[in-house]
Image (cartoon, rainbow, N blue to C red; front, side, top):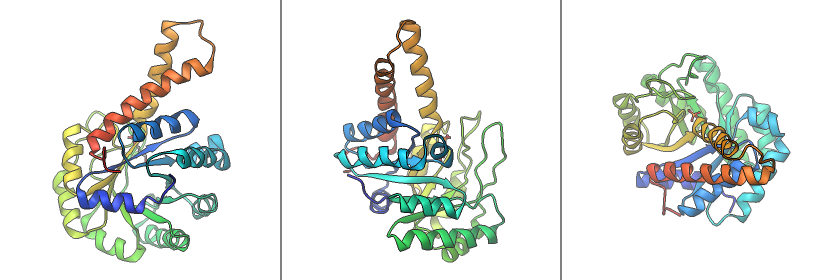
Length: 276
Ligand code: 13P
């Protein structure tokens, strides 16, 4: 069923597990995410980034996720990942998104707070929850991140009214050489607020750190790069076995199987299996 992300994340925070938020850009990845959640009896968040929306179009991509979610036996939220403008927030809300992230972390704190506040108001007017980002996540090999400053946390939450807070504690988007998390920083932030915390850039983070993060307030975990790696590796494997294969349905059925298995392992690591 298509549901809000709010209840699933609040429950995760209270019971000390995390809900996986997995990025999609097409039918096959969406089906694999939902099949994995069903197999593990887990709630799940299906995320679409602005780049994925540009690739597939908002109507098509949200249509795929909504129709697959409606058929699902587990709660599925349709999430905007890293919305950078208020106009994309508005478009997603008008297209039935049940969860929003506004990312103002590329701006100065004050500007981030003002824009995020507006996104939160727009989302709440439609009864949809909104996540914001404080500090900034870097992208492996491309941009530098900035750890979240704990001194900004309380003011940011009060001024913006965000439902969930994405923090920068050592992970990066992509898979880096060293993505160990700053657990003391996480503990400090967690001691300051009760709202669920979000870990972005989780591909490449050691499993032991993921577990420690969940114990210390992380209740939503975002995975994208691992999905893309599995997708590409799986296609290569299929074509290496049979170079003559030219039926996309044959190729992509195997890709979906590999994706589902990988995502099921993540769901078990996050502890949301059996939590429906
Ligand atoms: P990774 O690409 O490192 O998995 O990060 C995904 C993410 O944070 C999406 O918002």
